[in-house]
Image 1: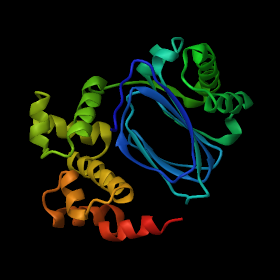
Image 2: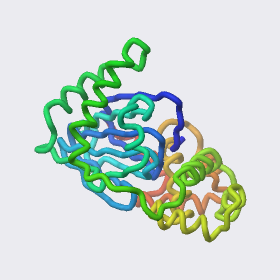
Image 3: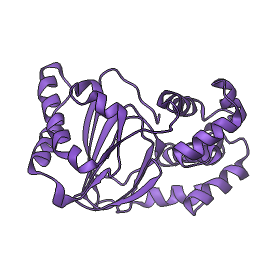
Image 4: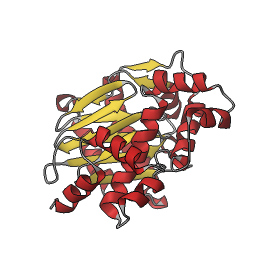
Length: 266
């Protein structure tokens, strides 16, 4: 699932494995610090290479993807996700503004940020921790917000429809989707939907759908014993040749070779 909408959400993790997330969106704020390695991240339409020690902040309803450029053993991402209801003092700002500079270099990180991050990574979302979590998150935001150069949203379609479209595709990508069928589902014209993808997401509808399907295929190749024909069907491709061609276009290898590679990884 590449869209989440929970009434109350907090999650913090030290991720040591290489990651690859396709373009997605969610209603919580995401903090990613590259403790080790390098990450390439698209936030809205801009692409950033985030170096070791740097922080990226993704505001709610902002499309983004990322993948690590470093290998296993040379990667550590400290990731904190928080739904805005845990941040009542900042909620309105987080939903009405966006950062023009969402990546903060290490030299601009106040020591309070690293202190709060370390505490949050060791906490779970339990009622007795709620006030502490909210305070630590607010501390991080207070230190980071002046560095982000916030701006107002202008000439953007309602974010709700963008989020709902992405949520729908995430739930139905295994089906026989096309631009027209998704547009009909939301009562808009297919050309309007096409413009939403190109102008807001910075990617065509077909490219986004293929990226979502192929990312799921890679997960199945790595984590299941399903044969490649079954995986193709599971991911919405009823023609294995089409599946193989698109997979190779996006990964420079066939599904069979990809499975051999990930099995051989230590």
